[in-house]
Image (cartoon, rainbow, N blue to C red; front, side, top):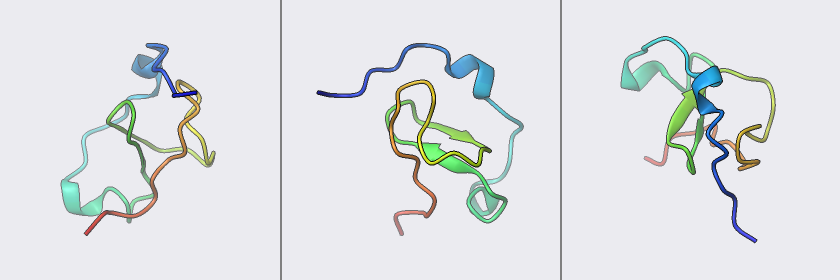
Length: 57
């Protein structure tokens, strides 16, 4: 069963940070919603997708 975005991502959007500093600043990325969030959780509450903590490069 695939994860579906429930549209509550608007609550979790944060401040703008340059691309190179996002992961080092503690932000995590939801690959399903394509958003960066600052949270201590492992999964994103909107779609329950596991958050990415490292860049792909």
